[in-house]
Image 1: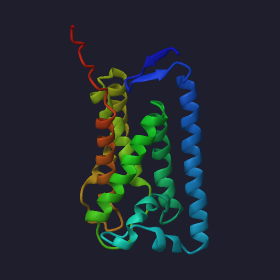
Image 2 (image 1 turned 60 degrees about the horizontal axis):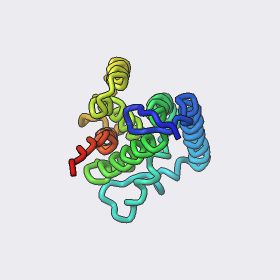
Image 3 (image 1 turned 180 degrees about the horizontal axis):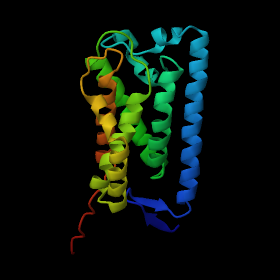
Image 4 (image 1 turned 45 degrees about the vertical axis):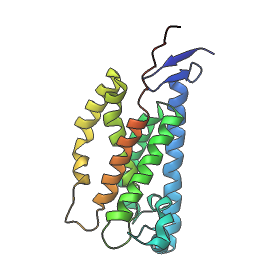
Length: 207
């Protein structure tokens, strides 16, 4: 099977950019629809799901809520503020392939949850903003690890358009904003970019 490279390793030729673009739109669109359905159910239950599946810092019994807290939101306004950047950043990452996307998403999810669990303040944390910051951070740094000029160019464009959101990783006096989730997600995105960087090929040794 013919192969080509896109900065993230060999990719089957039949896995065209159009195919990945379509897959990215379907996946991210479906994910946002899932978040909306969950928010409808949550609203009908007076947001009782947040107290059950939201993430409580340093609570041993609730450590598995790391898996569920990004799926919940405080209200529809909260969901809408995350939905558009989540679709944009997720779509752009998906263009590099499903394996790259799932790796970046998983590390963003885990990094966000661990940061909240370890250093979060009081109360319950919900929301997908940690995923937004993780995917954004991944897009910002991956080009430098891949030495891909077009990915670096994309990171510059994204930084100019959305760079101000990076202030969200700084400690804030606003108790309703989880900067810990933002910081942890961003760290997870950078870790994913490091792990997915191309490996140097070993030089062949003469006999």
